[in-house]
Length: 301
Image 1 (cartoon, rainbow, N blue to C red):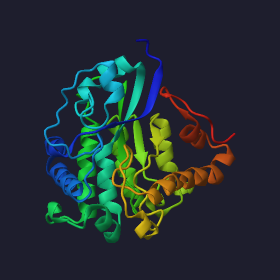
Image 2 (image 1 turned 30 degrees about the horizontal axis):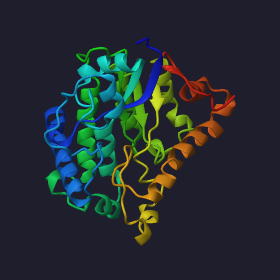
Image 3 (image 1 turned 90 degrees about the vertical axis):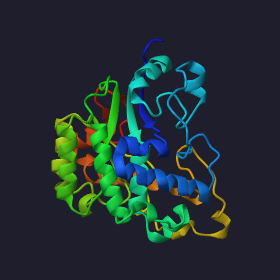
Image 4 (image 1 turned 120 degrees about the vertical axis):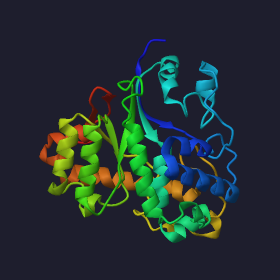
């Protein structure tokens, strides 16, 4: 098949029972949490991250790659098979987001009340670590894995590194530099709270934007970690108690789905109103193009 498309939102879908093999102790903790969550809110969908026994053995053929989702899908686990999947789908290059790391960020950032509602409140799987400490450890392991230079086809299969939000802007810059120096081609930023305690349009963030621009690294936002942007108590009502499953956000409810886009809308409008109107080439780069990945519609003149 002729390669035509650029895919800017694919994922790894490593199931819980294999996370320890990939990410060490922090991975095992997250895998145990996935098991607890599935007992609390059984997820019948193919994207359930607790599917013991699933391996990346499904044949790469058109029927499987278009119809099968979640951990059982071809190359959901083994990224060494992803190039064959791309060839079959007619995709040139692909950004690969971290399903597991997004889950870890959610676990580390949500309030105790929200965690109890989503995961039942059990924290025994984290041992002596707090939830934020667990998330921080997992993110280190994930970024190490994402930067693995031994993975084949790194030009076509571009793993998205993660710069977690911190109130310490220096910590975020250190992570950004580590990712850029390690060869990351794209990074994910959380949209739920101001980075480093600043508006993303503040000049204090210029060193980070300049770093990404000079290295030609795509900056991305993705739904799933909006716990600080809106108080989770908005979702607590009897009429929202019935959970339903989605390939994007499992064990969610209708209210969450109605607001999930708002944090990203706010982040983008802040950047546009706070900087892009000045004609900054950084803003143009961040929001109007993906260098060598493809183009999206410009958000500002």
